Length: 528
Image (tube, rainbow, N blue to C red):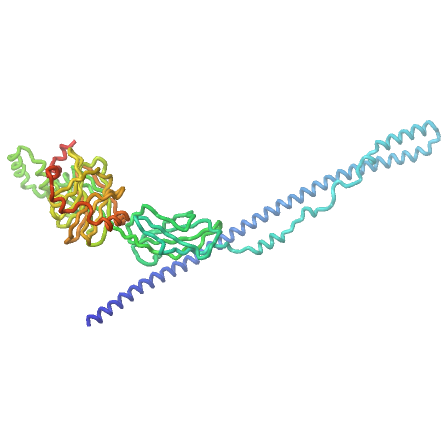
């Protein structure tokens, strides 16, 4: 009976997954169908615009060439008209001279005849008719202004839609996700020498499989990629997966998108848990700062409500013991914090936890102290950490501690034992946790130099834990385990300190622990 139920449950799960897949596919089809109509209307509009532009060019050319013909007509007409006027005037003068010469033939007086003949000779020499060219200055031929549009007509008749590049193919086997970088590689199905560049698009998602039409994130666009490979650097992996698609472009148009691919980008993401922090800590999503005035005003209001009837008696007790109220006792004996009626850490435990537990796997995050931070600790803890417990002083916390006040120290701490480091404090600390193998390692986040390794067997889930006093910390999550750290853990497993090595203390270590114990108990109002 149970086996049949299990089998039926598997069938139900399979059917449910298939139904979800079909729903997404139908959604994608409807989206594509709608886009077909939209894009069709757009390309028709673009086509009409192109033809209108072509018509405008043809009209402009027609007007310009017509004006050229008109100008040539005016020029020739003017030349011929001038030549006609001159020829007509020359003809009238020649006819008059001819008549005068004919009349001279009838002169009988020899002197008069000689005089007339000489006059006729002089006039013939200067006559316009003999100075004019008898060839027209312009012809009636206008064929030099004729046009032949046969080639252009043939070209127009051969107009086709733009040659669009084919869709590239993303080579999934060559894609690489490492060190918060993603390298995407693709190829063209056929060689195309006219491709000018590529457009790569990506988006983050928490859905495995094919990209969904309606997703929380929009596509990010990377244009003008000149090779068939691109690496996205400096990513924060705050989603489980990333979708990628690419399209090729020539000088004229962009082609279709490639089939999208989904790459896994899992990483450990968490924030500071403000509900777990000490009231003297000001907590934001990725940052925490020491606030010596934190909660004082709220405490007074709460005390005023809860202890209204006994306020005078309490003041008398405090005055009788010390003459003035004890600042330390006032900071310890707080009323319940107004954050959801909780005060997770109090007294001198200036601690805040992460909001996500680690139950298995390998994880990595980084912490950067603010400039001039006096004291801070970074590490892991079980959730059953007591509200007065300090990191590194109990058997359920492991940390590295940095002290920059009065006496500088840099040490690994666990169960109230310490191991000092003879090295400078890095600007940023990387924390690596391998829950299954029971390893907690600290690195210089810049060069991935190993600082210290704790080796233990975790008996329950752990959470990132932080202590800060007179300063602040900035948290960076969404990081993959760096390849350098992963490689080091494989080849150098066991290097560095362990929790057993801390048990061998020397006086300097004991002094450091003592100093660490006393640091938070100093009244913040007395600090420089």
